[in-house]
Each structure stands twice: as structure tokens, then as C-alpha cells.
Length: 237
Image (cartoon, rainbow, N blue to C red; front, side, top):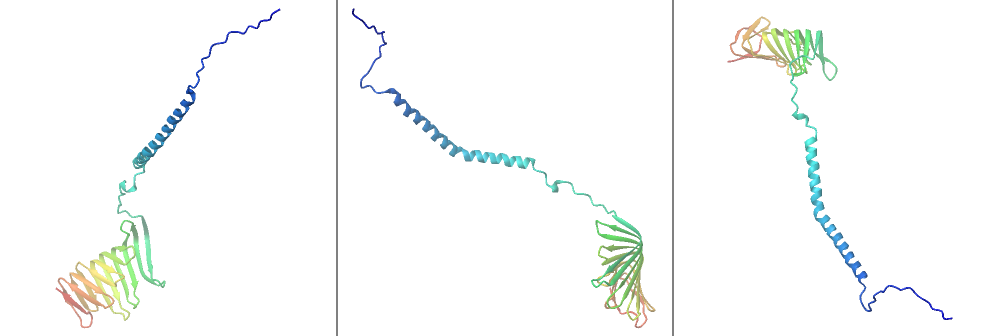
């Protein structure tokens, strides 16, 4: 008996001898394209990144300027009024020197302090001061305006200053307005005044009295009745 083996028909596969393989050639081209794209990306970032950062900085600066709080200088300044911040009845103000000695005292029926000018108004005022050489000065008036440091007193209304030396000799100055310069130890008047010392009397339009030298300087119209030895002075036309 003769045996036969039958194999199924297989598909025909074309075979080319010596032909190049197309698949490996495609991979280098793809890698080249990817490498070229990354190079272009780096170049683009290097070119445009500084510009993008500058734009971002400009936008941030504009936002800060627009929404920053307004300076306080743009607000309307407060109106300072000449109104006392405190008052006192039957008050006594005292000033002491560096050694603790009382050098000046101010008494009044009513005292008002004004913060805008740092001045003190005193009604029915009485001022007393003692200098180092022993001369004592007392002043009275219907009202006085004193500087904050009590260095200057402007006496108004029946003003009267009595200056008494250590030997008891007295000079009296009277007028409607007098200025007492406490630190300079002077009395100034720009309105008519009367000066009395002993039996002498002097009337003048303006006056400057220096307590340290006990000298009167008179100006304007001057009329006087003098007793020898009472007043040392000079008239200024």
C-alpha cells in the first residue's frame, strides 16, 4: 500500500535578494525631526523669555501703582481753631529755675490755654518774679497773654508794673498795654505810659525799661517832672 502526504497550500511570499530594508531608514528621520524641534524650542525660549519676564514685571508694577494706598498728604489738612483745650478757675502757675528756686508766679481768676499758639490767657492777672540780684517785679492787669514758657507777658487793661530794687528804690510803670519780657528783664510799651519814681513822673508815647541797668529809654512825646536823683533816663525824639 502506498502512503501519500498532502500539505496545504501556503501563500506566496515575495523575496528580494539584496534589497535594502525600509524600516530601519525611517527611525533616524524621526529622531532628526524630534531633535530639530527641541533645538527650536530652546532657541525660542532663549529669545522670548526675557521679553515675557519684562511684560510680567510691567503688569505687576502697574497693579501696585493702581491699587497701592494713597499717601496721607493727599487728605485735607485739619483746621486748627483758636479754642482753649483747658480752663481753670483761680489758678496759680509757677516757674522754677534749674536749682529749684521759684523765679516767677502767675495768679488769675481764670486761666485758658490755647494749643494752636501755646499761649495762656489769664483774667485779673497778677505776676510776681524775683531776679538773682534781688530785684522783685510785680505786674497786674485786667488780662494777660503769656507765652507757653512764661518768658513774655502781654498785659492789657490798666496794666501796672512795679520794679523794686534790693535797696528799696521803686519804679512804677502804668499804661493800657505793657509787655513784660521776663527772661530779658525788660518792660516795653508801644502806647502812652506813665513812669513814676519817688517824686518824679514821666509821660511818653513809647518806653523801654531795662531792670538790670535800671535805665529808661523814652521815645515819642515826652513830658516829665523830675526830682534830682530819682530817674536816670534819656529822651529819644
